[in-house]
Figure 1 (cartoon, rainbow, N blue to C red):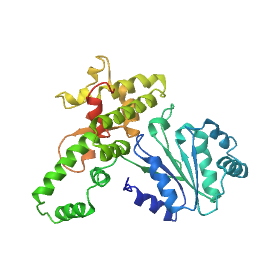
Figure 2: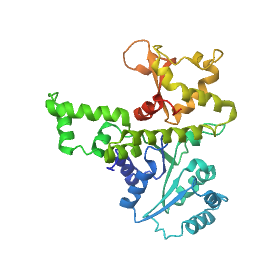
Figure 3: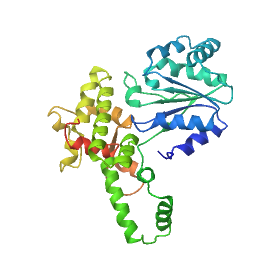
Figure 4: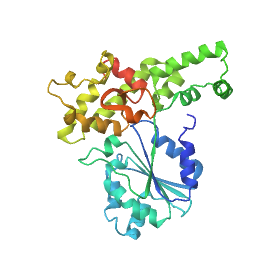
Length: 324
């Protein structure tokens, strides 16, 4: 898979003067782990990874987060590899599984021996009663599904063609008809495949739509499992909203109608649930505006919106049924 566009932001963080831990977040399965591993391999001499979802015992490292000597000793003992100060990256993956690790980040950053990147989906991070709040010592970086340009590179479209298209766009030139038709076919494939790296990789290697759909449904199932971790008071509402997205988009109504969930449903009771899904990068609300003039944010109607999944491929898979 080619480098993602987030790569430039990772490089800017590493070379920046402001030393902070990096928190890479976004919807699940957008490629956070793969990208950070690749970044570490190319930019650091030493690398240590701790995955809190794969190893429950890793949380013991952060049982005493107030003593930096004990913390560093526990960390290096756990990873079992040499870490050179100033040339090492420590990657804390699925950090939503270990809140104590984030509590320890201020001490680790202040210690300054190693660089730290955390990764996690806010669908898991926000599963508690309180919403996620960034720390002063960490920089937030959002990662999204692959856009059309990234998809084209992964699917084998030559750089010369992408450069030609960019030139035509910048200079308002007509695109060669043959290239235009080819790119339209790629765009249709992108709408169905979406930008989840695993689905894109499957498409690029096999062109097997059935296999792509199977991957998309597995991702949707992962999202459903994360939803079940939310507090009981909002879990059912989030589940209902998530399950109704395809059907609501298929209706002629210009907004998400809560009455389709329940005749007694009201926005004041469901508002937090919409917010949690959007804040985790799983859904994208598209608001009505009073008039199409900038700034649109000042003209939006916060209670009138259509709700989309953040990835077109997942939306297509969900719309086929047996997926949500």
